[in-house]
Length: 123
Image (tube, rainbow, N blue to C red; front, side, top):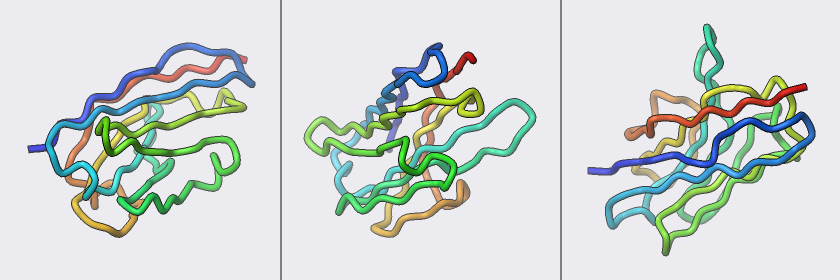
């Protein structure tokens, strides 16, 4: 069993910063590839960023250069540092995990999901 709980969402102005956290249960965290996805109302869930156990990272073009994904294997936590936020970043952000060393941008490839945290960017 792997459980994921996101936190850190909120309301910020455009150009501001926010850091999301995802706490993972279980004792095999370091073997999981982690991902962040987001979903706006009426739209499909889209890939944001991913990191594997070697800390290889990959980002969606829309957030590249602004967002940074990282992980703390001791604390069993993955983070998403979001800078230069834009109104179009507004969405519910979900963390996800998959038991593989490879990264994936597809939601269907992830085995576990958190409940999501709302991020709202005002203009």
